[in-house]
Length: 146
Image 1 (cartoon, one colour):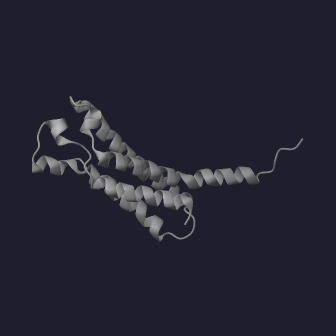
Image 2: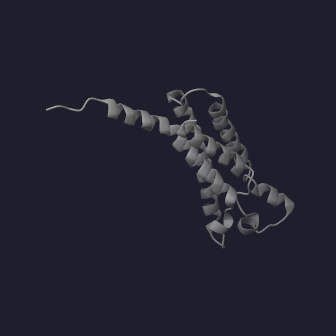
């Protein structure tokens, strides 16, 4: 398996895992602690469904495509990974808007960080073929002569 596929695979799996973990702490952010508010913590208000769906969309081509992941996967893969990063960034902004008294890190939980890591890995893996093909072209190009 190629390095880029392994990186995208790891990122997609982390996106799926992070979608089912708690993203925020409702007692810290809203001052309520009941089963309904605890249910909202997982994937924070359906953002986990979005990032989990992105993880599935990134995972399927990695598992079923043959050969190298080329340009036809780079743009959609990078777009989807970037979309997941923007979802997480929006959640970070919302926590900052709420401005919990205990602090930013007390208001967030492990799921949002796992999701961010997965999105960054997926973006890196999706863009890897572009950088490696550019480097290969530079290595095979004739050196300028005198």
